[in-house]
Amino acid sequence: MDVITIDRDRCNLCGLCIDACVRRILKEERDAVVVTDPALCILCGHCKAVCPVDAPQLKAYRADEFIDAPSGKDIPDPDKLLAFFRSRRSIRHYRAQPVEREKIERIIEAGRFAPTGGNRQHIEYVVVQSKERIVEIRDIAIDVLADQADRIFKAVEKHRTPEGVLPESLQMAALYSDSWRQLARLRSEGTDWLFYDAPALIVSHMVPLGNTSEMIDAGLSAMQMVLMAEALGLGTCFCGLLVIAAETEPKIKDLLRIPRGHIAPVSFLLGFPDIKYPRLVSRRRARVQWL
Ligand SMILES: Cc1cc2nc3c(=O)[nH]c(=O)nc-3n(C[C@H](O)[C@H](O)[C@H](O)COP(=O)(O)O)c2cc1C
Image (cartoon, rainbow, N blue to C red; front, top):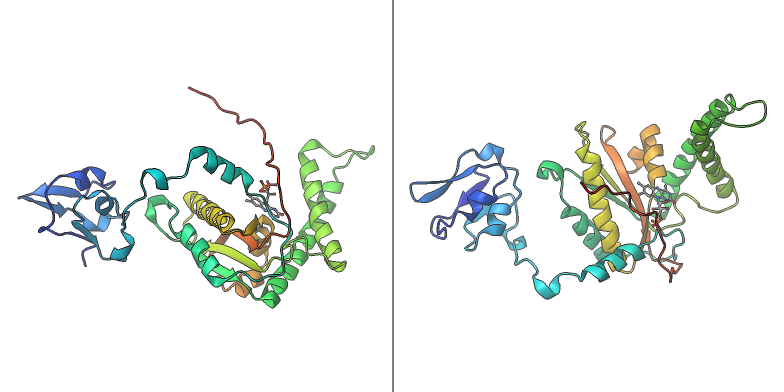
């Protein structure tokens, strides 16, 4: 089956699609645009998006999603956009209020439209809203982290000098191991300092291709989702600790229904914030070289 066909009745041979094609697989031949090597097509849709007469047809996608791009007034004002980016905070206090499915679907949509290397679109998502399952996953993750923390702690302590000083290279590990152990301590006091009692958890996963772009893909999609959540009045917090625990303990992937061979590079908590941040924060100055 052809991945792209060019509707000859519509095509006016303007050549825009030929120039836009990243794979250089479109060319004009005997008064028609032809696809020279369909197997090379990455289905990016640029040929259709650029065409003034909508001649390219891509069978893989829903035609009704190729709608007019926003223009002028619909594009966010740069100052407002930056303020919006800056106002997102990692939320660690959530209301005990479930998140409506429509909102989560819009969040996933935001992730779906993020770019992926080679347009692979290989990210899959798991949404967990069952309180019992969230707690089950959380408890396994905390146990895994506490266990790792003990091992790190022991390894690090061997390097402490008689004066009680740790080499600088191990200070970070000591700090982490301490905060991971604290998760178990806090849980015993009834405080969830891993998932923060969030009513929903979203995890991205994919078949590993051994390529750095997959981590970036997952991160980009997650960032778009997190910003969409923000626009919907929701709060989020990335949970790298769950990612670490899931790589160590396969039961976590099983509970998430993630195939064991998949990597799960990003997860974030989601819910209605029970905290307000009326002030933006500062960050280190950007270290930039202008060449
Ligand atoms: C990849 C990644 C993993 C993170 N993992 C955790 C985590 O496990 N637990 C947590 O509370 N925060 C986590 N965070 C949130 C960061 O601590 C937070 O983004 C940072 O302190 C800046 O605060 P802000 O997000 O409010 O700007 C993570 C953030 C990123 C980008």
